[in-house]
Length: 390
Ligand SMILES: Cc1cc2nc3c(=O)[nH]c(=O)nc-3n(C[C@H](O)[C@H](O)[C@H](O)COP(=O)(O)OP(=O)(O)OC[C@H]3O[C@@H](n4cnc5c(N)ncnc54)[C@H](O)[C@@H]3O)c2cc1C
Image (cartoon, rainbow, N blue to C red; front, top):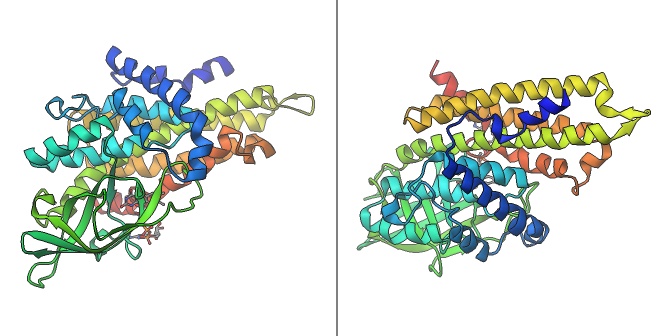
Protein backbone atom coordinates (compact mmCIF):
# COMPACT_ATOMS: atom_id res chain seq x y z
CA UNK A 1 0.00 0.00 0.00
CA UNK A 2 2.64 2.47 1.07
CA UNK A 3 4.33 3.24 -2.27
CA UNK A 4 1.07 3.89 -4.09
CA UNK A 5 -0.54 5.63 -1.18
CA UNK A 6 2.28 8.17 -0.92
CA UNK A 7 1.50 9.39 -4.42
CA UNK A 8 -2.01 10.35 -3.34
CA UNK A 9 -0.44 13.13 -1.38
CA UNK A 10 1.39 14.57 -4.35
CA UNK A 11 0.10 17.24 -6.74
CA UNK A 12 0.81 14.86 -9.62
CA UNK A 13 -2.48 13.20 -8.68
CA UNK A 14 -4.22 16.37 -9.69
CA UNK A 15 -6.17 16.21 -12.92
CA UNK A 16 -6.39 20.00 -13.15
CA UNK A 17 -4.96 21.46 -16.37
CA UNK A 18 -1.73 22.88 -14.96
CA UNK A 19 0.56 24.09 -17.75
CA UNK A 20 4.34 24.33 -17.70
CA UNK A 21 3.94 27.99 -16.75
CA UNK A 22 1.86 27.02 -13.69
CA UNK A 23 4.50 24.46 -12.73
CA UNK A 24 7.30 27.02 -13.01
CA UNK A 25 5.34 29.27 -10.66
CA UNK A 26 4.80 26.31 -8.33
CA UNK A 27 8.55 25.71 -8.13
CA UNK A 28 9.21 29.40 -7.48
CA UNK A 29 6.57 29.40 -4.74
CA UNK A 30 7.97 26.24 -3.18
CA UNK A 31 11.48 27.72 -2.98
CA UNK A 32 10.10 31.00 -1.61
CA UNK A 33 8.12 29.36 1.19
CA UNK A 34 10.76 26.78 2.10
CA UNK A 35 13.80 29.08 1.96
CA UNK A 36 12.43 32.50 2.85
CA UNK A 37 9.44 31.82 5.12
CA UNK A 38 9.84 28.50 6.95
CA UNK A 39 13.08 29.56 8.71
CA UNK A 40 11.29 32.63 10.11
CA UNK A 41 7.97 31.12 11.14
CA UNK A 42 8.82 31.07 14.84
CA UNK A 43 10.02 34.69 14.81
CA UNK A 44 6.90 35.76 12.94
CA UNK A 45 4.74 33.87 15.42
CA UNK A 46 6.47 35.65 18.28
CA UNK A 47 5.84 39.01 16.59
CA UNK A 48 2.29 38.04 15.61
CA UNK A 49 2.96 39.08 12.02
CA UNK A 50 5.35 38.80 9.09
CA UNK A 51 7.60 41.74 8.14
CA UNK A 52 6.66 44.00 5.23
CA UNK A 53 9.74 43.13 3.19
CA UNK A 54 8.52 39.58 2.64
CA UNK A 55 5.68 41.07 0.58
CA UNK A 56 8.12 42.97 -1.63
CA UNK A 57 10.03 39.75 -2.12
CA UNK A 58 6.84 37.86 -3.04
CA UNK A 59 6.11 40.64 -5.52
CA UNK A 60 9.58 40.41 -7.08
CA UNK A 61 9.06 36.68 -7.60
CA UNK A 62 5.71 37.14 -9.34
CA UNK A 63 3.70 35.57 -6.51
CA UNK A 64 1.27 38.47 -6.12
CA UNK A 65 -1.88 39.26 -8.09
CA UNK A 66 -1.23 36.50 -10.61
CA UNK A 67 -4.75 36.71 -12.03
CA UNK A 68 -4.94 40.50 -12.06
CA UNK A 69 -5.13 41.82 -15.65
CA UNK A 70 -1.77 42.54 -17.31
CA UNK A 71 -2.76 46.14 -18.03
CA UNK A 72 -2.81 46.81 -14.27
CA UNK A 73 0.56 45.18 -13.70
CA UNK A 74 -0.80 41.78 -12.69
CA UNK A 75 0.09 38.38 -14.04
CA UNK A 76 -2.91 37.97 -16.35
CA UNK A 77 -3.24 34.37 -15.16
CA UNK A 78 -6.03 32.26 -13.74
CA UNK A 79 -7.03 30.48 -10.56
CA UNK A 80 -4.64 27.60 -11.31
CA UNK A 81 -1.76 29.99 -10.57
CA UNK A 82 -3.32 30.67 -7.18
CA UNK A 83 -3.89 26.98 -6.55
CA UNK A 84 -0.27 26.09 -7.34
CA UNK A 85 0.93 28.76 -4.92
CA UNK A 86 -1.52 27.76 -2.20
CA UNK A 87 -0.61 24.07 -2.42
CA UNK A 88 3.06 24.94 -1.94
CA UNK A 89 2.30 27.26 0.97
CA UNK A 90 0.30 24.57 2.75
CA UNK A 91 3.00 21.99 2.09
CA UNK A 92 5.61 24.32 3.58
CA UNK A 93 3.44 24.80 6.67
CA UNK A 94 3.45 28.60 6.86
CA UNK A 95 0.44 30.91 7.00
CA UNK A 96 2.26 34.18 6.41
CA UNK A 97 2.39 36.02 4.13
CA UNK A 98 -1.33 35.31 3.51
CA UNK A 99 -0.99 35.40 -0.25
CA UNK A 100 -4.41 33.96 -0.99
CA UNK A 101 -6.18 36.69 0.98
CA UNK A 102 -4.22 39.35 -0.91
CA UNK A 103 -4.41 37.68 -4.35
CA UNK A 104 -7.70 35.82 -4.44
CA UNK A 105 -9.88 37.84 -2.08
CA UNK A 106 -8.78 41.48 -2.02
CA UNK A 107 -7.30 42.13 -5.49
CA UNK A 108 -10.37 40.73 -7.31
CA UNK A 109 -12.62 43.26 -5.54
CA UNK A 110 -10.64 46.00 -7.21
CA UNK A 111 -10.19 44.38 -10.61
CA UNK A 112 -13.91 43.49 -10.80
CA UNK A 113 -15.64 46.45 -9.25
CA UNK A 114 -13.06 49.25 -9.29
CA UNK A 115 -13.05 52.20 -11.66
CA UNK A 116 -10.15 52.48 -14.11
CA UNK A 117 -8.59 55.11 -11.86
CA UNK A 118 -8.90 52.88 -8.76
CA UNK A 119 -7.41 49.91 -10.60
CA UNK A 120 -4.52 51.94 -12.00
CA UNK A 121 -3.78 53.44 -8.57
CA UNK A 122 -4.04 50.30 -6.43
CA UNK A 123 -3.34 47.11 -8.38
CA UNK A 124 0.27 47.84 -9.44
CA UNK A 125 1.11 48.58 -5.80
CA UNK A 126 -0.49 45.34 -4.65
CA UNK A 127 1.30 43.39 -7.39
CA UNK A 128 4.68 44.72 -6.29
CA UNK A 129 3.97 44.03 -2.63
CA UNK A 130 4.18 47.72 -1.79
CA UNK A 131 0.62 47.51 -0.47
CA UNK A 132 -0.87 44.65 1.56
CA UNK A 133 -4.59 44.01 1.17
CA UNK A 134 -7.33 43.23 3.71
CA UNK A 135 -11.11 42.96 3.73
CA UNK A 136 -13.08 44.15 6.76
CA UNK A 137 -16.62 42.82 7.15
CA UNK A 138 -16.87 41.23 10.59
CA UNK A 139 -17.78 43.33 13.63
CA UNK A 140 -17.66 42.51 17.34
CA UNK A 141 -21.43 41.92 17.49
CA UNK A 142 -22.00 40.59 13.99
CA UNK A 143 -20.07 38.13 11.86
CA UNK A 144 -22.38 35.54 10.32
CA UNK A 145 -25.16 38.12 10.20
CA UNK A 146 -23.48 40.42 7.73
CA UNK A 147 -26.57 42.57 7.31
CA UNK A 148 -26.32 43.40 11.02
CA UNK A 149 -23.09 45.43 10.76
CA UNK A 150 -23.20 48.83 12.45
CA UNK A 151 -20.23 50.66 10.97
CA UNK A 152 -21.57 53.67 9.10
CA UNK A 153 -20.28 55.90 6.34
CA UNK A 154 -22.15 59.22 6.17
CA UNK A 155 -21.71 61.72 3.37
CA UNK A 156 -20.10 64.93 4.61
CA UNK A 157 -19.41 67.46 1.87
CA UNK A 158 -17.46 65.60 -0.77
CA UNK A 159 -16.17 63.05 1.75
CA UNK A 160 -17.47 60.05 3.71
CA UNK A 161 -17.28 60.08 7.49
CA UNK A 162 -16.83 56.58 8.87
CA UNK A 163 -17.52 55.43 12.44
CA UNK A 164 -17.61 51.94 13.88
CA UNK A 165 -15.53 48.86 14.67
CA UNK A 166 -14.36 45.68 12.97
CA UNK A 167 -12.80 42.59 14.47
CA UNK A 168 -10.86 39.48 13.46
CA UNK A 169 -9.48 41.30 10.42
CA UNK A 170 -6.67 39.38 8.75
CA UNK A 171 -3.81 41.81 8.00
CA UNK A 172 -5.53 44.25 10.38
CA UNK A 173 -2.14 45.37 11.72
CA UNK A 174 -0.32 45.61 8.43
CA UNK A 175 -2.81 46.32 5.64
CA UNK A 176 -2.28 49.37 3.43
CA UNK A 177 -5.50 48.85 1.50
CA UNK A 178 -8.67 47.75 3.28
CA UNK A 179 -11.89 46.85 1.48
CA UNK A 180 -14.32 48.09 4.11
CA UNK A 181 -18.00 47.19 4.43
CA UNK A 182 -20.12 49.95 5.97
CA UNK A 183 -23.75 50.99 6.05
CA UNK A 184 -24.20 54.08 3.94
CA UNK A 185 -26.67 56.19 5.84
CA UNK A 186 -28.01 58.98 3.70
CA UNK A 187 -30.46 61.52 5.12
CA UNK A 188 -30.98 59.22 8.12
CA UNK A 189 -32.73 56.71 5.86
CA UNK A 190 -32.20 53.07 6.64
CA UNK A 191 -28.93 51.97 5.30
CA UNK A 192 -27.60 49.50 2.80
CA UNK A 193 -24.09 48.10 2.77
CA UNK A 194 -21.53 49.77 0.53
CA UNK A 195 -17.84 49.02 0.06
CA UNK A 196 -14.99 51.49 0.42
CA UNK A 197 -11.32 51.35 -0.49
CA UNK A 198 -9.46 52.58 2.56
CA UNK A 199 -5.85 53.68 2.03
CA UNK A 200 -4.86 52.97 5.58
CA UNK A 201 -1.34 54.25 5.95
CA UNK A 202 -1.32 57.29 8.26
CA UNK A 203 -5.09 57.77 7.93
CA UNK A 204 -6.54 59.89 10.74
CA UNK A 205 -9.39 58.28 12.64
CA UNK A 206 -8.24 54.73 11.90
CA UNK A 207 -7.09 52.83 14.98
CA UNK A 208 -5.59 49.36 14.80
CA UNK A 209 -5.43 46.94 17.71
CA UNK A 210 -2.43 44.71 18.45
CA UNK A 211 -2.29 41.26 16.83
CA UNK A 212 -4.89 39.01 18.44
CA UNK A 213 -3.44 36.02 20.28
CA UNK A 214 -4.81 33.10 18.27
CA UNK A 215 -5.03 29.32 18.66
CA UNK A 216 -3.30 28.88 15.30
CA UNK A 217 -1.96 30.82 12.32
CA UNK A 218 -0.03 32.97 14.77
CA UNK A 219 2.47 34.04 12.09
CA UNK A 220 -0.29 35.98 10.28
CA UNK A 221 -1.71 39.12 11.88
CA UNK A 222 -5.37 39.40 12.82
CA UNK A 223 -6.61 42.53 14.57
CA UNK A 224 -9.45 44.79 15.59
CA UNK A 225 -10.00 48.07 13.80
CA UNK A 226 -11.81 51.14 15.07
CA UNK A 227 -12.95 54.13 13.04
CA UNK A 228 -13.52 57.47 14.71
CA UNK A 229 -14.65 60.15 12.29
CA UNK A 230 -12.39 58.57 9.69
CA UNK A 231 -12.70 60.70 6.58
CA UNK A 232 -12.55 59.08 3.14
CA UNK A 233 -12.64 60.88 -0.20
CA UNK A 234 -15.75 60.44 -2.34
CA UNK A 235 -13.58 58.50 -4.80
CA UNK A 236 -13.08 55.72 -2.26
CA UNK A 237 -16.53 54.21 -2.89
CA UNK A 238 -16.07 50.83 -4.59
CA UNK A 239 -18.69 49.84 -7.13
CA UNK A 240 -22.31 50.74 -6.77
CA UNK A 241 -23.59 52.68 -3.75
CA UNK A 242 -25.58 50.22 -1.63
CA UNK A 243 -24.32 47.26 -3.68
CA UNK A 244 -21.96 45.96 -0.99
CA UNK A 245 -23.93 42.90 0.08
CA UNK A 246 -24.13 41.61 -3.48
CA UNK A 247 -20.43 42.22 -4.12
CA UNK A 248 -19.44 40.51 -0.86
CA UNK A 249 -21.68 37.52 -1.60
CA UNK A 250 -20.26 37.21 -5.13
CA UNK A 251 -16.67 37.39 -3.98
CA UNK A 252 -17.20 34.86 -1.17
CA UNK A 253 -17.63 32.17 -3.84
CA UNK A 254 -13.95 32.37 -4.84
CA UNK A 255 -12.86 32.72 -1.21
CA UNK A 256 -14.76 29.54 -0.30
CA UNK A 257 -13.35 27.71 -3.31
CA UNK A 258 -9.82 28.60 -2.24
CA UNK A 259 -10.61 27.56 1.35
CA UNK A 260 -11.63 24.18 -0.08
CA UNK A 261 -8.43 23.99 -2.12
CA UNK A 262 -6.43 24.78 1.02
CA UNK A 263 -8.31 22.10 2.96
CA UNK A 264 -7.50 19.42 0.36
CA UNK A 265 -3.84 20.46 0.37
CA UNK A 266 -3.79 20.37 4.17
CA UNK A 267 -5.31 16.89 4.29
CA UNK A 268 -2.83 15.57 1.72
CA UNK A 269 0.08 17.15 3.58
CA UNK A 270 -1.09 15.74 6.93
CA UNK A 271 -1.44 12.28 5.41
CA UNK A 272 2.04 12.43 3.87
CA UNK A 273 3.59 13.39 7.22
CA UNK A 274 1.60 10.72 9.00
CA UNK A 275 2.40 7.91 6.59
CA UNK A 276 6.11 8.64 6.90
CA UNK A 277 5.79 8.70 10.70
CA UNK A 278 3.82 5.47 11.14
CA UNK A 279 6.27 3.59 8.92
CA UNK A 280 9.25 4.42 11.11
CA UNK A 281 7.70 4.61 14.60
CA UNK A 282 7.83 1.28 16.40
CA UNK A 283 5.54 -0.05 19.11
CA UNK A 284 5.32 -3.61 20.40
CA UNK A 285 8.27 -4.51 18.17
CA UNK A 286 6.76 -3.39 14.87
CA UNK A 287 6.01 -0.23 12.88
CA UNK A 288 2.69 1.22 13.99
CA UNK A 289 1.56 1.07 10.35
CA UNK A 290 1.29 -2.70 10.89
CA UNK A 291 -1.62 -2.30 13.31
CA UNK A 292 -4.94 -2.80 11.62
CA UNK A 293 -6.30 0.32 13.30
CA UNK A 294 -3.57 2.45 11.70
CA UNK A 295 -4.11 0.95 8.26
CA UNK A 296 -7.90 1.27 8.45
CA UNK A 297 -7.70 4.85 9.73
CA UNK A 298 -5.37 5.82 6.91
CA UNK A 299 -7.28 3.79 4.33
CA UNK A 300 -10.46 5.69 5.14
CA UNK A 301 -8.67 9.04 5.26
CA UNK A 302 -6.93 8.50 1.90
CA UNK A 303 -10.24 7.46 0.37
CA UNK A 304 -12.05 10.50 1.74
CA UNK A 305 -9.23 12.73 0.53
CA UNK A 306 -9.43 11.25 -2.97
CA UNK A 307 -13.21 11.72 -3.13
CA UNK A 308 -12.90 15.27 -1.84
CA UNK A 309 -10.19 16.10 -4.39
CA UNK A 310 -12.50 14.96 -7.18
CA UNK A 311 -15.26 17.32 -6.04
CA UNK A 312 -12.81 20.15 -5.42
CA UNK A 313 -11.43 19.80 -8.96
CA UNK A 314 -14.97 19.79 -10.35
CA UNK A 315 -15.57 23.08 -8.55
CA UNK A 316 -12.29 24.52 -9.89
CA UNK A 317 -13.26 23.54 -13.44
CA UNK A 318 -16.67 25.15 -12.98
CA UNK A 319 -14.95 28.31 -11.72
CA UNK A 320 -12.63 28.35 -14.74
CA UNK A 321 -15.77 28.41 -16.91
CA UNK A 322 -17.49 31.06 -14.73
CA UNK A 323 -20.02 28.45 -13.65
CA UNK A 324 -19.30 27.86 -9.97
CA UNK A 325 -22.35 28.91 -7.97
CA UNK A 326 -22.70 29.85 -4.31
CA UNK A 327 -24.28 26.52 -3.37
CA UNK A 328 -21.49 24.33 -4.74
CA UNK A 329 -18.88 26.63 -3.23
CA UNK A 330 -20.66 26.30 0.13
CA UNK A 331 -20.78 22.49 -0.24
CA UNK A 332 -17.05 22.40 -0.89
CA UNK A 333 -16.17 24.77 1.94
CA UNK A 334 -18.35 22.90 4.43
CA UNK A 335 -17.29 19.35 3.55
CA UNK A 336 -13.62 20.11 2.90
CA UNK A 337 -13.00 21.98 6.12
CA UNK A 338 -14.94 19.47 8.24
CA UNK A 339 -12.83 16.67 6.77
CA UNK A 340 -9.69 18.75 7.17
CA UNK A 341 -10.26 19.05 10.91
CA UNK A 342 -11.28 15.43 11.45
CA UNK A 343 -8.49 13.88 9.33
CA UNK A 344 -5.79 16.14 10.76
CA UNK A 345 -7.01 15.17 14.24
CA UNK A 346 -6.81 11.45 13.40
CA UNK A 347 -3.32 11.99 11.98
CA UNK A 348 -2.28 13.73 15.18
CA UNK A 349 -3.60 10.76 17.18
CA UNK A 350 -1.38 8.39 15.17
CA UNK A 351 1.64 10.48 16.19
CA UNK A 352 0.93 9.84 19.90
CA UNK A 353 2.53 12.36 22.25
CA UNK A 354 4.77 13.74 19.51
CA UNK A 355 1.62 14.89 17.74
CA UNK A 356 1.08 17.37 20.56
CA UNK A 357 4.55 18.89 20.26
CA UNK A 358 4.76 21.95 18.04
CA UNK A 359 8.11 20.88 16.57
CA UNK A 360 6.11 18.27 14.67
CA UNK A 361 4.32 19.60 11.57
CA UNK A 362 1.13 17.70 12.42
CA UNK A 363 0.70 19.70 15.64
CA UNK A 364 0.89 22.99 13.75
CA UNK A 365 -1.46 21.73 11.06
CA UNK A 366 -3.96 20.84 13.78
CA UNK A 367 -3.79 24.33 15.32
CA UNK A 368 -3.88 26.10 11.96
CA UNK A 369 -6.79 24.03 10.65
CA UNK A 370 -9.46 24.81 13.21
CA UNK A 371 -10.32 28.27 11.92
CA UNK A 372 -11.23 26.89 8.49
CA UNK A 373 -14.66 25.77 9.78
CA UNK A 374 -15.36 29.32 10.99
CA UNK A 375 -13.95 31.97 8.66
CA UNK A 376 -15.21 32.75 5.19
CA UNK A 377 -18.64 32.01 6.70
CA UNK A 378 -19.14 29.47 9.49
CA UNK A 379 -19.97 25.97 8.23
CA UNK A 380 -23.46 26.28 9.71
CA UNK A 381 -24.02 29.19 7.32
CA UNK A 382 -22.78 26.96 4.46
CA UNK A 383 -25.47 24.42 5.40
CA UNK A 384 -28.06 27.22 5.42
CA UNK A 385 -27.00 28.27 1.91
CA UNK A 386 -27.21 24.66 0.69
CA UNK A 387 -30.45 23.97 2.56
CA UNK A 388 -32.19 27.07 1.22
CA UNK A 389 -31.45 25.96 -2.35
CA UNK A 390 -33.09 22.56 -1.93
C1 LIG B 1 -8.33 34.09 12.32
C2 LIG B 1 -9.54 34.77 11.77
C3 LIG B 1 -9.43 35.52 10.60
C4 LIG B 1 -10.54 36.19 10.09
N1 LIG B 1 -10.38 37.02 9.02
C5 LIG B 1 -11.39 37.85 8.67
C6 LIG B 1 -11.20 38.89 7.73
O1 LIG B 1 -10.10 39.02 7.16
N2 LIG B 1 -12.22 39.71 7.44
C7 LIG B 1 -13.44 39.60 8.03
O2 LIG B 1 -14.33 40.37 7.75
N3 LIG B 1 -13.67 38.62 8.96
C8 LIG B 1 -12.68 37.76 9.29
N4 LIG B 1 -12.87 36.79 10.24
C9 LIG B 1 -14.19 36.68 10.85
C10 LIG B 1 -14.95 35.41 10.46
O3 LIG B 1 -15.35 35.47 9.12
C11 LIG B 1 -16.13 35.30 11.45
O4 LIG B 1 -15.58 34.93 12.69
C12 LIG B 1 -17.17 34.28 11.00
O5 LIG B 1 -17.87 34.76 9.87
C13 LIG B 1 -18.18 34.00 12.10
O6 LIG B 1 -18.71 35.18 12.65
P1 LIG B 1 -18.70 35.40 14.25
O7 LIG B 1 -17.34 35.11 14.75
O8 LIG B 1 -19.29 36.71 14.55
O9 LIG B 1 -19.64 34.25 14.81
P2 LIG B 1 -21.22 34.37 15.05
O10 LIG B 1 -21.88 34.97 13.90
O11 LIG B 1 -21.43 34.95 16.40
O12 LIG B 1 -21.60 32.82 15.10
C14 LIG B 1 -21.13 31.98 16.15
C15 LIG B 1 -21.62 30.58 15.86
O13 LIG B 1 -23.06 30.59 15.90
C16 LIG B 1 -23.58 29.67 14.99
N5 LIG B 1 -24.45 30.37 14.03
C17 LIG B 1 -24.45 31.67 13.68
N6 LIG B 1 -25.41 31.93 12.80
C18 LIG B 1 -26.05 30.77 12.57
C19 LIG B 1 -27.16 30.36 11.76
N7 LIG B 1 -27.79 31.23 10.95
N8 LIG B 1 -27.55 29.08 11.79
C20 LIG B 1 -26.91 28.17 12.57
N9 LIG B 1 -25.87 28.49 13.36
C21 LIG B 1 -25.44 29.76 13.36
C22 LIG B 1 -22.36 29.02 14.30
O14 LIG B 1 -22.02 27.84 14.99
C23 LIG B 1 -21.29 30.06 14.47
O15 LIG B 1 -19.99 29.52 14.39
C24 LIG B 1 -11.79 36.07 10.74
C25 LIG B 1 -11.91 35.29 11.90
C26 LIG B 1 -10.80 34.68 12.42
C27 LIG B 1 -10.94 33.96 13.73
